[in-house]
Length: 329
Image (cartoon, rainbow, N blue to C red; front, side, top):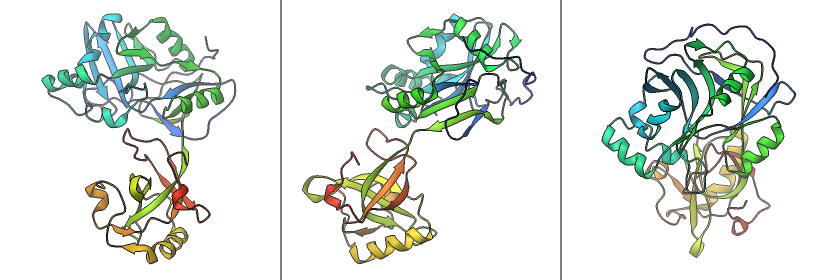
């Protein structure tokens, strides 16, 4: 049980949207907070969903307020475990390794045909990770402190093949480390005495994303608003060709752009140095180069096929030969 004091009411669903009971409370991005007043959850790489259960019926709503019940038929029997509740959580799709895959989930999230949703649910089912309780047996709980809401949520003993209550921790650094070990997106830190503020991006909730760095070889660039709109990067593969790892546009300021152009312009070539096809949207208008320049890139995670998510260039690596680059960084 988490200790928490009393807190003022957040009001009775003052941020209602058509169809949905309320707008979800949102977090701010920041550094991992510390202290006795915080609790920590894993940040799942999925999509937000409210589950409104009452009168034997269940409706799921996206963050936008759009109803998404039909997309996830495997969650329908959640309603048998509670009579009247409004749950907040995240729909995730866990791969064979147990890690969430947003890429795989993208095939599910926009489906509105019942038959197609049923077919997809049979072969790539989702899991609903529940982390908050906003109404119970007709009572609005948004004015309760987070600690009290979590205690009430845990007391419902919700659990099934396709849903679970997201675990809660009191050690922030250990939670952050565990998230990295399990390949998760990051950590959510929440003030234990915070009320639920519908539709508000509040500093009472802080999302801390895991990021890693790695070295990659530049195989070309795409012009954009400036001369370099994005670098096309990869790692050395068979026969001296590069294995494509994605387009990196973030972090290229004016000074770094000048450095990159100084190194890359003399290396222009007429053919792609990548093994296999580069996605059409990345290859369109690309300027290819002999793969000799190495850059250090900071990114969040990778897609199942190895592409970098949320990448940005940190610096050039003139000290590192291209042939020494591998996926371990």
